[in-house]
Length: 202
Length: 113
Image 1: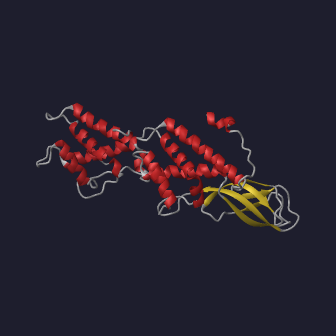
Image 2: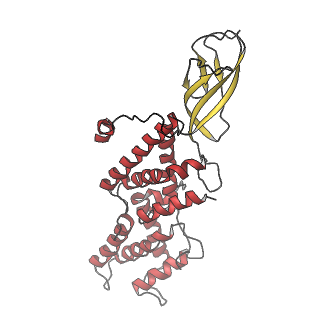
Image 3: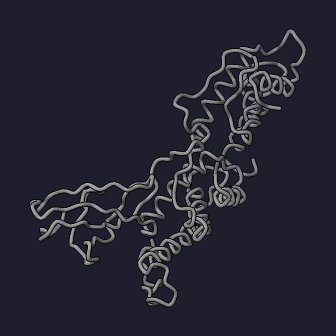
């Protein structure tokens, strides 16, 4: 069963989208959550894995996240002394170190995640409930925006779709900023001026 | 209530003023109209058939549930009525049939239809 927050989100969406059916809302909700998590890196997970000094350069270390989610990108990689280790993850889950390690060690990769295929009986994807609590209105904007972009539906409204999507993009940007600074109040306050945000004009 | 194939046919007969046997429009003709309405709805509103690989068809007027969201059941009555009245009969006119089919389309694609 959908959580209270999710129920509220869908009820809000139903009010703004006359005639919309739940399976369509569910479909677009998945897309919106995917956009939100991929764009913001707000959903992160730390995964530890063993490396050996004898491993050749170019060795692929496969890691798997515990959450029911898809891996998006490598946020950071650190050794057991919490020092950064240079690496790439061209294929999600496959880490390749840029330099050999000198000692056997346990590395910790922090990766960002996004929603995966729904696994619950009611068809909703799993994701951290606090994200919906914190960014619920922004996600609602994204959902309504995507729904209103659908052609030839009772709720189609291209003007409002642009407005809602713009607001959603703002929340993705805010979440990305907060993910970067771990939601620290009074941390780095400078943000790229939004009037120069080239994506807005498109 | 508008849940089963029999409900759809009953409501359509009301609009057609064809409630007393022997019927002017047979059950098979109205079933055919319902099935064609499904095909038309699939074209206009694919979202109504999410998770369905083939458009449902119905073969008998019975208690079989018609798989359709509650909000969009009434337009099918209009389509079935319009489609039935497209037949060349003395008691009907084409504009009335077109009006019903237009109402079906409008209700599926606009708010105020």
